[in-house]
Image (tube, rainbow, N blue to C red; front, side):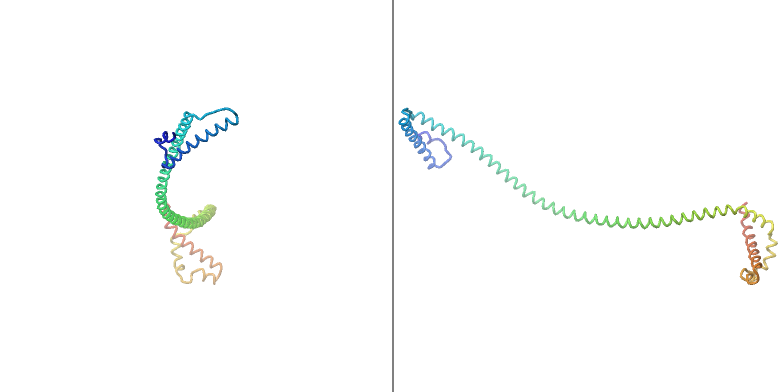
Length: 232
């Protein structure tokens, strides 16, 4: 009976395995019949294995096999799809690995160039900082000199301003007392070789002062004579 119903039913197996399934169906049928006899002998209640129950057993096997076969087919298809994806991923990974190697080489070259540029910039910055410090030192020294000069200038201007009244009085007195005629009379003496401060000091201190004063007055007259027209 099992042979009749299963011979045309597709089972994914060899003919030998399919025949074993048919034989097993018959074996199960015989075992159930024996158990029915044992059940009667123990409980004195009869039960039978009918052709209908046997056909139902075969139909149940076919239904379960179809369900499980479909389930295994779905799992197999999913596995096949997964494997295909894995193979695609492997190809992509290999390609990306090759590109990564090339990128790493390019990155190494770029990193080396960046280090060289950074070193050069650092050295130039350090050199510029040294020059800046040296310039600042020179600037500070120059500023100190300018400040000292300004202080000296203010002090000199203050002293000059304090002496201005006396200087103006002296200029006025000299303008009135020293004339061109007086200077002309002094010129023969001023032209003498030994008419100087050093010789006068050897002779007499008072004479040295007079000698120095006459030379200064003659010199002042000459300068004042040139300056007066400019003042006008």
